[in-house]
Image (cartoon, rainbow, N blue to C red; front, side):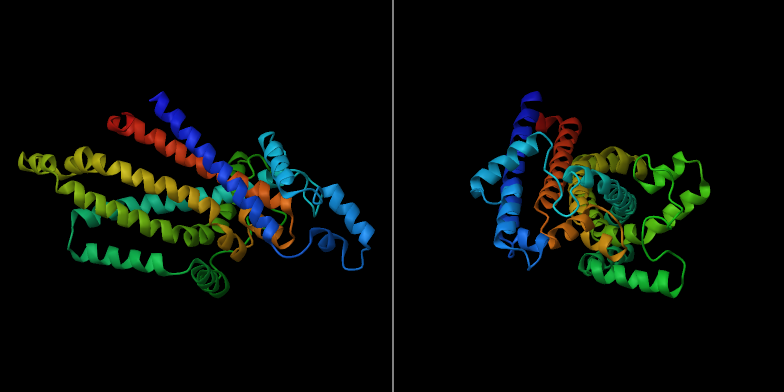
Length: 333
């Protein structure tokens, strides 16, 4: 088991190395000049050269990439070009907002998707099964930006049931402990703040959960149908075992690994795919920070954010592999 985990960890480190190369090259292929962007069109050639030298942009690309890797291993991605603060510090400050949104969306998607998939799979061919398949097809097909805007227009601007955006109302934020509004409101012992935090999270979480909810439901249904055709499941039913026990002891155990895989992958994808949702609902999270940094050509900030997200994604995949080893001894080799 230890050898398998070490091998997998080595593979994931290679993935991180590849991601670092892609991020670095992509940022340097963007049109425009950072020095000109920062100093303006009226800057002299001497001023531009001086700033490029200070930022290390006058060095060969390979030298810049090697320095980027060396600094990244130490957790130092440099200072933001736009505000001068450490890039990793800015990323860590924005990450709790994205993490809270991601966890809420995943909880909603898995909490609703797995039961729906089980019910549809146990009633294959029924009206319930057809309704679930049709609904999930719509969920996969609807663009996030359109759904977010429609929910915003209907429930915020139209019915005025929910806030239009933001994490909390201005001036009513709980004391920052975790950086996530719901845990901080609980730690503050304020039901009023907790209510506001939940209300502000409803629309973004529903918007972001739509696609993973559909995928988790469809995968769960397919695995339940496949598991229900196994001989040991037929034997358990023939012996008169209660339906709920058949589902819990035989069907869900066989379907657990694929469901674990899709849930784990959705967690990583949600972390990296919250850009549109955070932009629609004005959430100061990691996705919005990356967009602003890309537009400002803030190399250190973009690189720090991208590597941080990649690291979280790789860590989630590693934990999924650990779950595989714990749930299925056959994977241990």
